[in-house]
Length: 239
Image 1 (tube, helix red, strand yellow):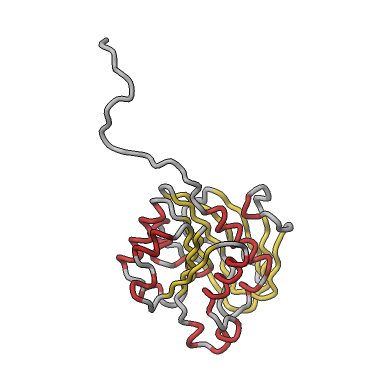
Image 2: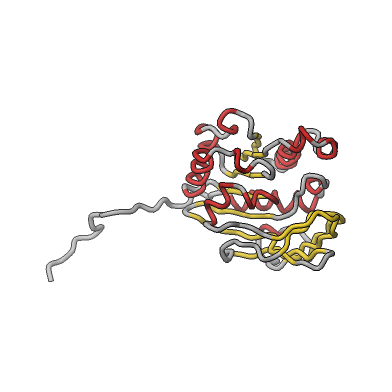
């Protein structure tokens, strides 16, 4: 399976704390543990030509992992539309943390995707609410993160096809932190944790969720429907 990990790669260049946590970039850290799990991984970043998402790259990508935060508006509309179309055509999409506000995710959801937030070192407890789902394989009842950015309800997304995780935060808020959606032939997994100033993507349980999410989102050679006016498959008898 071929996986492309996309990241703005801006915080890592501008913030020493982030650079210290992710010396190879958030994209590099995620691509590395996915590669260790057996995926054929590549990375792409905002400042590359076509944001690293050329037609050839997208055509070869089975699952795209997307992390963005401070530069959503710098993503070109035509590239976001091209990614959306690839999802509709069957490419899997794993949307991480603040990529809830990315052009790609908002196009696919059709809503504002807005929420409450706070940076105050909240403890986060991510509860598994669908223990039978393959994305939860290998986990316990919950994942606990000592410090994370808080996201709180209401999260302005359509009702998920499946709700997999719900987070509780030390400040009292809750959040639908793991949800899946289907659009066209594509499968989408949104997973909340991953603020850039915390080492969240070094956490083995978080890595397990993302790895499971990539496996789940891959298109398993599903049939391609056809549309429009069609000739009958059988002879239609006169009535």
